[in-house]
Length: 217
Image: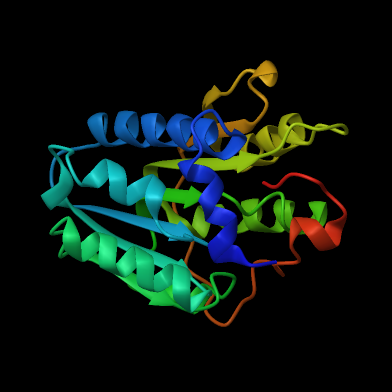
């Protein structure tokens, strides 16, 4: 899979990914609008070109409050994200070309106030989705917002993902309508953050093409 070329669908109006991106961005805006005053930290796992967070931060009133780390393994996509952040003057955004599955890449940023897990859950096994959710209390500060995505083809795993989050102290804020053609979920962490377990692998990125899916995340 060419993951840089995969991003081209975001530029096609009305495409599955373009509509999902719009939904994710709107929820990021709401999360920032509702965030506590003062400095904020945001992390994005498998950030790709960073379109979800960077496009919002570019013109959001809280942009200068947000220190962010985007973690993306593909060096081409990471470079595009780095260039976009610089062009928007987002000096507090760091783009790390690294394996987003490894917890050490979030050291110094976790627990964060905003955690993005978009484009992952359709590219890993169901067991690894639950494993990622299990790490969420280590990544999230109390009151943090987690925004995640997952396709809604049968068998629809979105209800189970919601339950996994809620079993770990997260409250459901919003889930996209099943008829939307994509799944976007938003949860808020009401518990106490756990220490970050350094040296741990949260998931193995397989790829939707290898998993046999025809659409991603």
